[in-house]
Structure formats: structure tokens, C-alpha cells
Image (tube, rainbow, N blue to C red; front, side, top):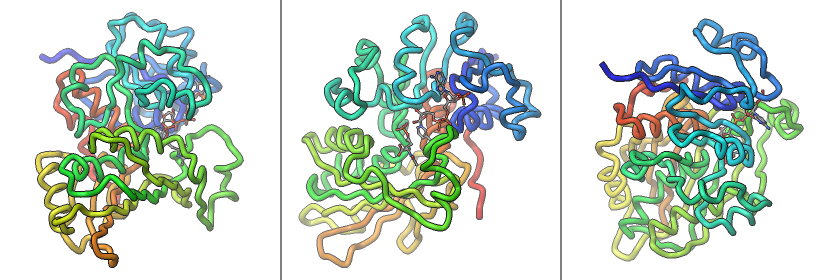
Length: 347
Ligand SMILES: NC(=O)C1=CN([C@@H]2O[C@H](COP(=O)(O)OP(=O)(O)OC[C@H]3O[C@@H](n4cnc5c(N)ncnc54)[C@H](OP(=O)(O)O)[C@@H]3O)[C@@H](O)[C@H]2O)C=CC1
Ligand SMILES: CC(=O)N[C@@H](CCC(=O)OP(=O)(O)O)C(=O)O
């Protein structure tokens, strides 16, 4: 019989924490042994999230009161800046799957520039492996610390990296127009996510200065083997879950839209969670809601030489908690789809 992986969830009272619990509830290879919270510490999960009240879960405690000794892995669903301080105190034997932005950027100067402070655990930043499961499987399998990509980078990189690696698109003039549901901003109370600020309208935010730009540029640049600039603009739309990125690209000389589609289809043909849609089908957030899937569509642009690649994910599943579990499965040699077999909730 396989050993059960003993997991802790740091930030279990947050949205990604709650979705980790929801997904792990059907994972037969993992037990949840520890759950931490900040303002909700001391409460049972049933009080914070009644929909999860039927599960046999430990109560929420402060991370300072945690006993790490009976854990194999911790998932960190904490605000960025917080994880790096907390996990520096963990014993080495505990593996870490971080959902925050703390360990994604390889260059410490880039991190300091975009996150406004020097990294507080640079030794851990050096060892962290970028956790885009489909594109970095082997290093993730061997890693102790995996940095799950941001939700926007996940969708964008699944759409663009194979095209960049095969040089069927050009490294200049890359434009990513992105939309997210409001859960992307977390459960903590903020003026920007009040119902009255979000419902019945949509708006761009962090225009030309979103911290996912350097993350996308880092990974797309690696794929092209040269530095790139990506024009990335996110928008907040009035829905709970879901994310859609529309990527405008220039095709390389001699390629066409069919080449782009077949390049992606070939790259993902054995992937359980990434589907390239046939010509004529359009990806939509409702096609992936609640699931770990990413759907990608490729379209001709009316402007000659250009194409449009559209990807959609559920920000709380493939964009965070689902991908985190996929990475944990890889780290522990479990079947990659374990706990992630849910089909999308449509419509
Ligand atoms: N939401 C999304 O779609 C995605 C989120 N992420 C990243 O995942 C991480 C978690 O996001 P999300 O779940 O949405 O965030 P939430 O704001 O919903 O949850 C944050 C969690 O961290 C706890 N927390 C807050 N401050 C502290 C602190 N100082 N010390 C210890 N614990 C603390 C909160 O506890 P309490 O509620 O009890 O105060 C809560 O459990 C973030 O880094 C986020 O950027 C990544 C990809 C997508
Ligand atoms: C809608 C919304 O606010 N989304 C978040 C991104 C969510 C995500 O991927 O977060 P991390 O990079 O923090 O892990 C944002 O734009 O900051």
C-alpha cells in the first residue's frame, strides 16, 4: 500500500486554501493534518466555510503554534511577502508548494524592483523550481520547493511557451490582454473588490505595471532564449472564478495559423489538463469552471502575419490550488491527475 502524504495548508481560510481543501477531499493519497489562518485562527473550518463543514478537518490555528514534525508537505496560500519568512523556519524534510509570488522570479533585483523589498530568504529563492507542471515536469519531480506560477502567467505561458520554443512566433510585439474573476484578488476585504466596485462593469488595473509582467517575460524569454518585452494588461470582470487571456502574436516567416495550432496540439497531445480546441471552437471561462483544465484556441488575425491565441483557466484551480496539487503529485511520484479529475461545472 502507498504511504499517505501528510499535508499542511498554510492560509487555509483564504480562497486558495479553501479550494485546496475542496480538491484534496477527494484525493486518496493525501491527508490534511494541519490548517493555519490569521484572523480566523481558533475557529473550525465549518464556521469559516460551511460548504466544507462535512469534512473531518483539523481546526484553524496560527502557524506559530504548528507542529511540523508529522508533515511531509505544506501548501502555502499566504499573501506574498509572508511565505518567505514562514517557510524559512520549516525543517528541511518538509516539502513546500508555494502558491504565492515569493519564489517565482529568479533574479533577486527583479524581485526587489517589483515587490518593493529585498528578498528575505534568498537561499530558498535560489533553490525554488518554477511550477508550471506541463512545461517543467522533471525539475518539479526532484524539487523540495516549488513556486507555482501566478494565475495570469499560467494561462499565458501555456499558450505562448511552446510557440516560442519552436520559434513559430516572433519575440517582438507580444500583447497579452487578460481578464480575471474577482476571487483572483483573495478573500481579504478590500475596497477594490466590493460588490459595488465590481458588479455591472469591468475595468483594467495596474496598467503597464502589473507584477506578473516580469514573471511572464522571464519564462517567455527563456523559451525564446533571449530577453523579451510583453505588453500585459489585466482587467477585473464581474464573475467569481475564471480567467481568459487573449494573446496577440506575430507569426514567424513561413508559418501560418494551422502551424501554430498543430504546434500546440502536438505539444499537449498527451497532457491530461491542456486541450487545444479545433478550428472554429472558442474557449470561454465557463468551459473550465471548477476544473484543472486549460483550453486554448488559435485564430487568424485579419492583419496578415499575425495570429490570436486565447487561453482560459479557472484561477482558483489550474491558476493556483489545482496546479499546486498537480505539482505535489509530481513531487511525491503520485499519478499527476490524482484529486483533479473533476469535469468543469457548465454552464
Ligand atoms: N486567488 C487566486 O486566484 C490566486 C492566488 N494566488 C496567491 O495565493 C496566495 C493566497 O491567495 P488567496 O487564497 O486568494 O488569498 P486570501 O486573502 O483569500 O487568503 C490569505 C490567507 O493567508 C492568511 N494570512 C493573511 N495574512 C497572514 C499573515 N500575516 N500570517 C499568516 N497568515 C496570513 C489568511 O488568514 P485569515 O483569513 O484567517 O486572516 C488567509 O488564510 C496569495 O499569495 C495569492 O497571491 C495565486 C494564484 C491565484
Ligand atoms: C484579480 C486579481 O486581483 N488578481 C491578482 C492575481 C492573482 C494571482 O495570481 O496572484 P499572485 O501573483 O499574487 O499569486 C492580481 O492581479 O494581483
